[in-house]
Length: 96
Image 1: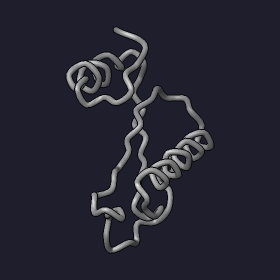
Image 2 (image 1 turned 180 degrees about the vertical axis):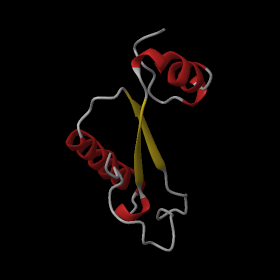
Image 3 (image 1 turned 90 degrees about the vertical axis):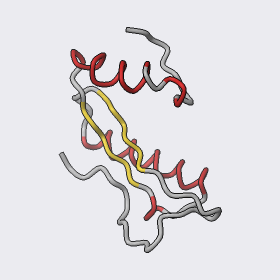
Image 4 (image 1 turned 135 degrees about the vertical axis):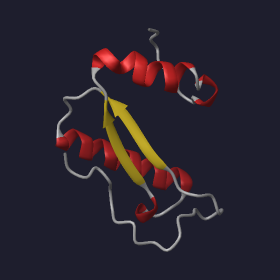
């Protein structure tokens, strides 16, 4: 799998105009998406982060973690969605 990050991280600082630290976005998904799909999604996420947080491309990183469908409940749904529901800004429309 190629490097899904967008841009190079050459900035001496990782802060926005208002001083917040920059995010590293992790997308968890089932295997099977093409490298082209991952690159397009990483670019879209990066563009939105730059626009909303008013930062440069060099401050944003995006990674993908593939999780098999039969392990989704144990590795993603329970630890990241159920146990951290208070941190979700967009909740899924499904339950397991």
